[in-house]
Image (tube, rainbow, N blue to C red; front, side, top):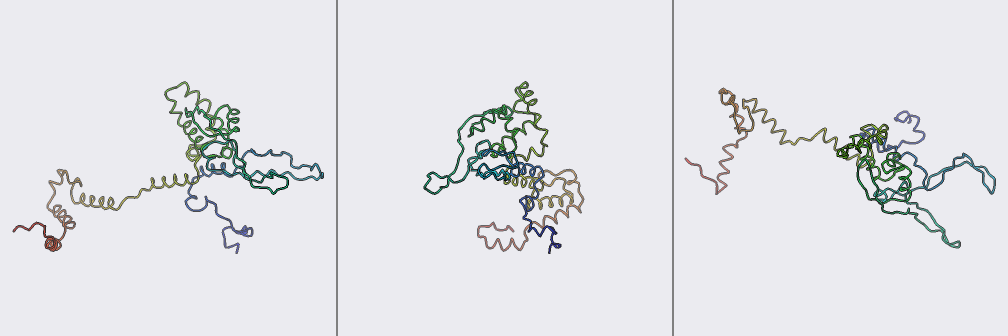
Length: 303
């Protein structure tokens, strides 16, 4: 059976499950967004809630048994509120807590200490109020500024969608030359000199797709497809065909508001062709006759 599938001998390990980038419209996403997705979701973030051990082996202090070291990260829960602020890599931890030595353990959620603060972006030239943690403030101070904090850290360490969107806006401003600082050329030159080095790691296409969630990327791709292949209504298409037929018949302008010199000097054959096309759209005499009989308010034909 393995020779009849695309997986070949790898089928012995089970069928390969298609990812979101291998089926549907997700397969049409550019490589620039897939690179960002790997940085955001598939890269191991820095240890925040535990201290990683650097040695490959450790000795048990009680039994003396040597065991291999396994740095297993804690499972984190990203709440919707975490995407509305910047928590510095922290998240909600779900576990158990034994609050009394003679009672069973109970479920417990550890939530980071949150506070509202104001940060300043030199590239965006804005003061932004957001919910942050103490670790976020410490990292901003260690990186010597809010812009450096966003540009130095990877997407897996920023975690929140708000931080990723702000990072994309900063990269777009740097790529365009900071147009929001056009009124202050001295400050604009200083900012470009200080932050221009971060653009070396990204291409213009990667900056355009950076920081989008999967749903936002799908909507952006669908908008691009609709812009490249616009849907023309049938009434517009039929109108264009009719205009082309009238132009072939000898009318210079299909609007009917103005008739050029060529239409005035056309031959009898062209006039006959126009009359023939007009009769095709005009209602037949038989239809108008029985309609006039039904409608009591219709005008009588004058003899």
